[in-house]
Length: 342
Image 1 (spheres, one colour):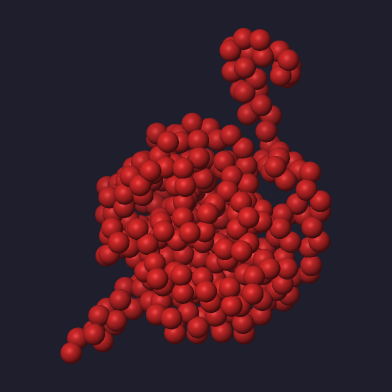
Image 2 (cartoon, helix red, strand yellow):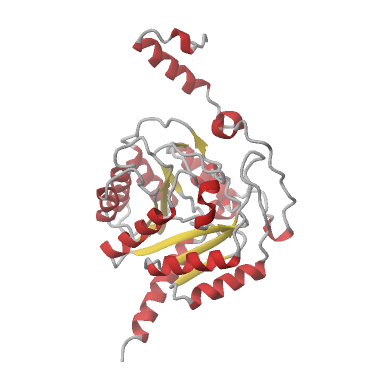
């Protein structure tokens, strides 16, 4: 197939044809095409993983069944796109985190393995396919996340809401957790659109300490993300709010503890902390392997600050054990309410 060069874009039709051909030739398994914004970065050294971070290859029958359902429904999962180390364990139990609105993100965070570029148009049939997959997988609790869609006026908020409602119609007993973008370029109605659809858990990850945002998460703003979490709790007090951090990026303990305080000031109920893993040589380097004892120390400190639930371990990720964690959240809220009764 002939590939038109930019010089041949002398008509709008030629430009449209170029875009079609570019999409057909983009192979997201090729690092330079998956992460064009990182292609010219110098290679970052990858240190050997400690024994506590290693996982088994996914080969179980449950894993294969989950993969077949995801493929048959034409869906994308963050488990695969972000290279989650827990995919074998979670998929063997039929737990998959759906990533809606495509597999191409409009941002290029230095820690993330999701492809960067110009996303496709939204698929209006995707919410129904997600709901069908939830039914086939028999999920009691489902996590829905997405790429950043700065190309959309509402950041994809309405698509989130339609997905939540589609799941509710087909799976009325299933609880729903959303892990949303920051809606940085949208007005306040975007967040409200998601909340009006009634998720059981609203999650937005701060990812790292504020001092590393310019280096690690350049397209985001720390206090904006913090305010998203605060607004969600102020708007819907009954919804659990949740946020996550990666460690090993170059932060220090005091910075992590300060983020915990910031989260509690914003009313965050559930905190997750996990080890950062470097996807490729072009991504941010792992600056330090945080020991299991340090994670235990972070967990103890977070509970002391008043979080209802904390999950802190090397392999902790936002949706890891989300089903069981939701039940623990409910119990923790009941226990906290009971302790306040005089």
